[in-house]
Amino acid sequence: MDQARDYWRSGGSDFIGISTKNFNASHYVVGYNGTRPFWDSLAAGEVAAEIINATNGGADGGGNRCATSWAAGGNFWIIAHSMGGTVMDFILGNANSSTPNFNLNGAYDVVAQRTSLVVSVGGAHRGSQGADAVCGDAALLCNFIAGFIQDCDDATFWLRSSDDVQVRTFSNAPARNVYLIGGFEAIFGASACLSGEDDGVVQYASIFACGGSATASYNNSNVCNNGFKQEASGFFNLDSAHENHNDERNAVDSDERRQVPDGFWTCGGASCAPNTRVQTGMTTARFISTLY
Image (cartoon, rainbow, N blue to C red; front, side, top):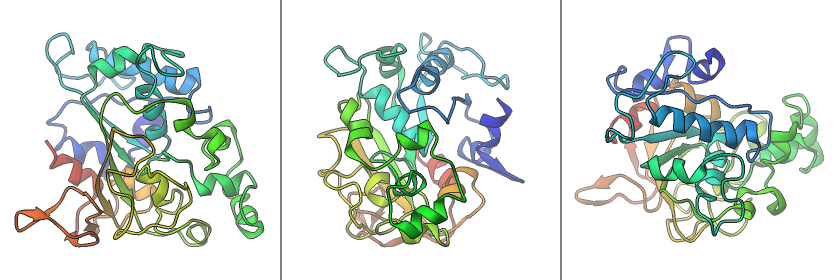
């Protein structure tokens, strides 16, 4: 559990502490095996089991528990980063008997019943061009650079942008709404291998769960709106931040935020124009804390 908890902090910066308003909101940290495919029993299966434990009032590995159980009327938000977004797509997209992998390795229907919404930060909904490079599916130079960064383990193989491994191929629209936040701070070298804006690991077409090509080139002005997603329903844009893939999850970079099409922010009572700078110094963790 220390590893799962540490994922959300760096030094004195703590995503969970900030997003819970200095722990005034209760929380439960879910851990899973990030080297396994998103659909695996140690990934989706483990996440489903832990969400059910959390909503039953059970404690996580660090002793944290939700203040109110589902049976007592609790309300549960799931905050997911990176592959966590893909895992939640699979669980919530297979939560009823008409879905292709209904309850594959856990009670996905119970998870959907008890979940209010998901906030996905830097999610690999359409796969990652970074994973393409790690697994040798990109341009030669990108493959060479990626080989020094990460191995093509099973999880990475299943996070490529190829349609045959994408979560939408194995699931339907999510049973609960998924709200999308993206980062647009480049990582030197890596971002050159990704299309359009990206957080250095995942491209906008994937972060914002776009329909069409998983490698389309998008920016804050033209990224897909809520009417052009990987599924006919269930995905909604929030905003973007000048954070890279790591900054998104550890709250170390309090930087500008920008509106995206159909995004969260309003200007003078109407939706702000895409690419409007809406904040000059706010982490994603802080932004999430303003949503409740």
